[in-house]
Structure formats: structure tokens, C-alpha cells
Image 1: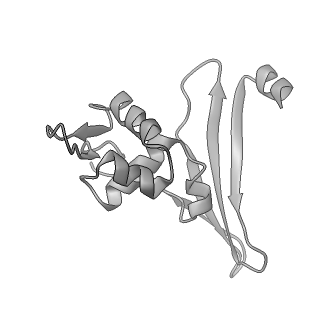
Image 2: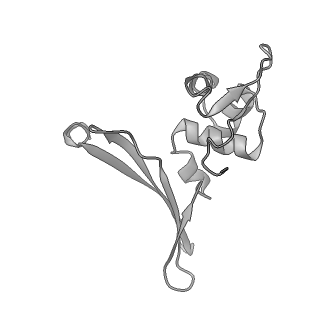
Length: 136
């Protein structure tokens, strides 16, 4: 694995959720490495085999398995889209990550993606309008 990682200039990982006999496959492409530029946002798709083969682009994957492999900031965005004004503990419980990891990600993106309340004891977090690219 190290050889492939170190030699590549651009590295994308394909994440898949498919159950036998299921007529749908959920996939995502996660951009993990770029030597010459910024990382691309993850791309999520649902492929339906019901009547032929149809591809559907998804903002957030409908698969919990795929979502669990997305970057932590994307997982936090999804939680805050569904239920704004959440504490670090609540977000960490939902995405099954350590509170320290979630707290670091929120603070790193504070003012860009997330904003926190002024309450120092029970601080809640929400999305900055437009941060998820769905509000125009």
C-alpha cells in the first residue's frame, strides 16, 4: 500500500455498499491525495439496476456505510443539515467519532463551514449559510 500511495500524484478511493440481491449499489469517490492542487469534494452516486442501469448523483450518499467513510467535515455537515444547533457530544455520537476529533474539525472550519454559539458551557454548532453548497 505504501508504494502505491507514495508513487501516485493523485489518489482516489472508491467506496462501495452493495448487498447480494440488492438492486442498487451506493458508491463514492473520495479524493485522498493530490500533489499538485486541492483535494476534490467527494462524489456520491447511486446505481440502480431495476430497469436497465441508471446512475444518480447524490449530494450525500443514502448509504450509512459509504457516509461513514467520508471525511469527518462532510459527516458533520450532514448531521447539521438534518438537525442544526448540535453540541460536539451529540455530533460525535451520531457519526461515531471521538469528541476530540469532532471538536478539532469544527474549530478548524469555524467561520468557513460552521459557526458556534457564544455559550461557553454548552456550545452548539450550525452550518454557515451556503457552506453545504445547497443554499444559493
